[in-house]
Length: 328
Image (cartoon, rainbow, N blue to C red):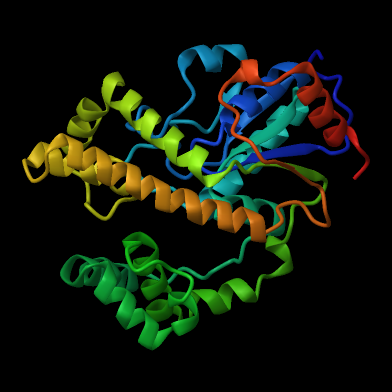
């Protein structure tokens, strides 16, 4: 289907799924067939230094269909939900102006939920609160700061993993700087940040069996090592970066960093990275099953891993396209 021939309803498509589910292959196939633009909705694929370990689309993939928001930020400039949402909406408008279908592809549920449902406008907590949060994170570590946050703002702490230092620090600075917890601000979402008007969303969720994902994760990490993942991490570690930055917590980075320091043999580092990816896949799958992305019920589930474009038969694509074109 040539660009511009896609019907205006729905106006935007989400292709979501856990890591290694094949969502990128599906998004690319649909972009080629429907005249679309693939817009990144993965929190780690925005960082330009991490092409291999985040499995960003290859140059060949990018030549087959337009892609946006991949590798657009340096690791030193952490992305955020608010930044990504604004950037994604701008890319969606650009796609619509060009007569193309915006196809948002990723597994970051928080990003997709903010895009579809809106994002709370949280007041700036100020430089003093930010500095305090960074200092406490460096001094105490994420687990201990999480415990402090749980005592001060239990609602926010309950939403965060004790290992997620960046978001824990964000929760602390908001509580200290505004006198109100981040969870409370998010629940009091103003109308100005509600769901974007003028857009109808449909979502395709790729949800393969867990065993298939684990096998795919192991094979993919081996391929990443062959493609130069160790050198990618070496180059990242050579930069003057705060250890709390999100890019330094990308799956595979901490484990390969330990290998480069001599703290782990390569096989143990690889096993640790694969295990961490497996835990993340489980969280992604659980989130996507329990958080509809396109109310009231515009979600199509695919319970199989898409190993490559050749797996998508014309019948598969026809069924998916029929769902996309159905009236909202």
